[in-house]
Length: 83
Image 1: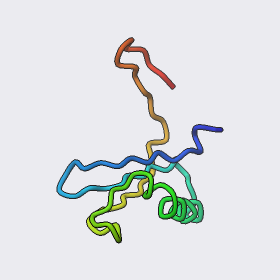
Image 2 (image 1 turned 60 degrees about the vertical axis):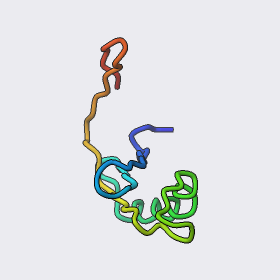
Image 3 (image 1 turned 135 degrees about the vertical axis):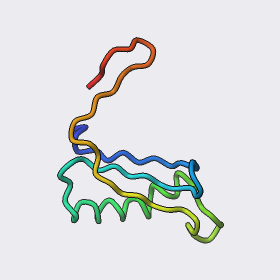
Image 4 (image 1 turned 90 degrees about the horizontal axis):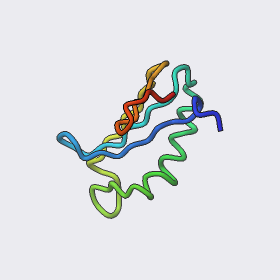
């Protein structure tokens, strides 16, 4: 899989309300984002279980944004830069 075409999905309870954060690669089309929303609704949310109540997802925000076009990661143990 080409990692540059992968979306990053996180669930966090930080802040005033729980939220699902979705970072899509730079240049992702709106059509691809809508297709991703279907996967979020049917598969991802069920695995993360961030429900505000048992019947729905009330109280959980979904934030979709474009990720940085060039990002570096640093291994905190070795302090080496990863790509």
